[in-house]
Length: 428
Ligand SMILES: Nc1nc2c(ncn2[C@@H]2O[C@H](COP(=O)(O)OP(=O)(O)OP(=O)(O)O)[C@@H](O)[C@H]2O)c(=O)[nH]1
Ligand SMILES: [Mg+2]
Image (tube, rainbow, N blue to C red; front, side):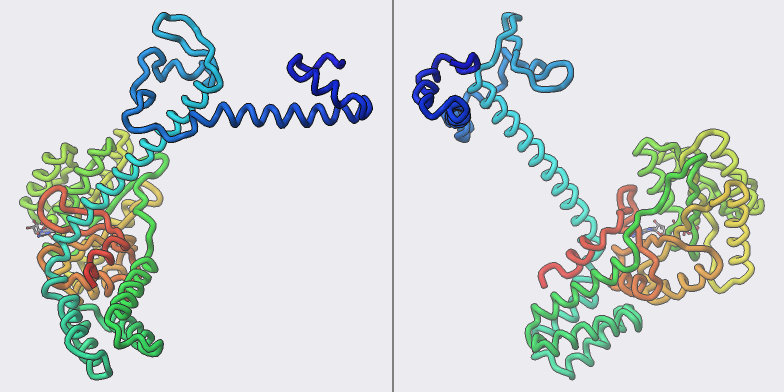
């Protein structure tokens, strides 16, 4: 009898002996393997059933705290320290039970993470609902809703749709794109079905927004602070947006410096200072009427010397049609690059949504002077012209990164194209 055969299986081996020693070994090996699998399954059965919620095994195990469940290497060990301080070897059944408990704990943690993401999304949706309330109840969504509900969608209705979209400040490109979408749905004999038309509009709008870019702003750079330059016409919401951003990034533990590049009005610097105090970040002030470019330069130098992560530069509001003031903005950008090559890393154009199509025109002019990389669309809460987001994406192909939905600190939200479209078209 070969020495490896355990006593329990020796009769079995003996029974196979007539087949010949070599064959006998093979057959005995197979029998041993089958027996091992059967034993494993039998042991596994009672533990594999799903424990009930009140099952004691789901309660915390005082005699085997979680930290004792793993050895120092982090690998699973079969030894556990009991309440008496003694090591005890777990049976196979206990090991399986423990694995089931661990799997349940992991599943619960995963479910919790999903829950956190869901509640975050619900929160964002609530902000957007506020921001899009007027667009949905008075703007083009409400008007299209009336058109689609009242009549069969035919060419006459399409002409009305076109007018609604133009009036809603969607602009030529976005309007034509959406009309083409509706016509295409019509060629698939879906025109009379309002639900299909809404679906097509929703899809097209999302594609437009995604095509304008989905990358977040790059506000982390190696070897010095990232420089974010904020530009826009008078009163568009630059200073307010900077205050909200400073609050957000400082809250994330980043070292933020705000540069008061609007040196035209003493009141502008004071206003910025109020926001900086609220956000708990320092402000770099220049002298009244000092060249804004030199304030920008000095702030970046200070940002480098004092180890700031981010320098946000406020600039004076200016009319996009004023060549002299636009040249001054160019100078600020040039000087920033001298203070730190590559700066400004992002140029955020702040547009007031209530301006509608005019905001798109402003953007076209601003980007001729400075490399606008991102758009913050403010005052969405105060307008029915929320469709201007589509006009911006379709015409400018610059991503809207932020939307302002009120005057409070938390009323500046990251733009999420999917959530935006979902909220805009909700109920249709
Ligand atoms: N309702 C609403 N108001 C906003 C929003 N963003 C800014 N405002 C208001 O818009 C007004 C102008 O904002 P500012 O931040 O001073 O604008 P600015 O671009 O810095 O203005 P100038 O420095 O004069 O060019 C203020 O009364 C803000 O409270 C927003 O998202 N919603
Ligand atoms: Mg300002």
